[in-house]
Image 1 (tube, rainbow, N blue to C red):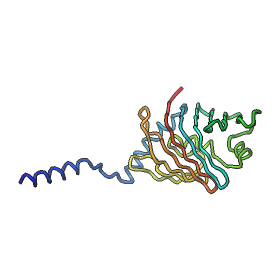
Image 2: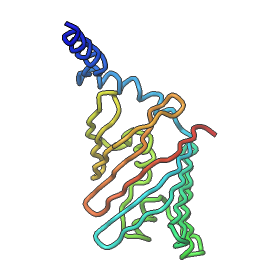
Image 3: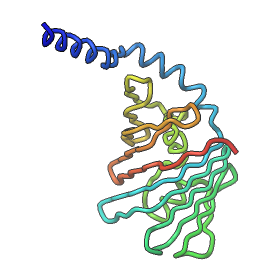
Image 4: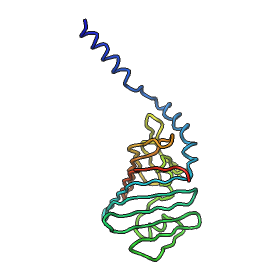
Length: 198
């Protein structure tokens, strides 16, 4: 009798610990509810690590990205003193400075500058949205949601973006690990710290 009671209690408690399945419609409702707050995030700082690889190149670095409205500053520092790259921009244009090229390089936007300097098309203006868990509003996306109404997978502008993990930050669910890939380039980003506002 006692053994049967233990089995029943184990099954009941086990059933209670399993989260209920969320329907696709519920996920869409959660996503719709989350979007306005995410879209209102106009100022933030993220710090973390980034790794990239292409057919001919690869590497990893620390990353510091500050966004304030339409203005941004991205600082990339390679390990072991291999160099730094600073990208600062806004509606008026973009400036690149690096340890390899002390003279500033100017361009109308970050995409044109990186294409010219590195030969890569990196959608920096779209990534501004991706890093907070949103699609770029200027380009139609294909989205797959998780059961908490967050983007799990995004296809946009020729890129596949997988959101592997989220973290809680001041009441928001923000990406912690993002894998981005197109036909020429793979980028892996891990956000170690978010700071919102200011």
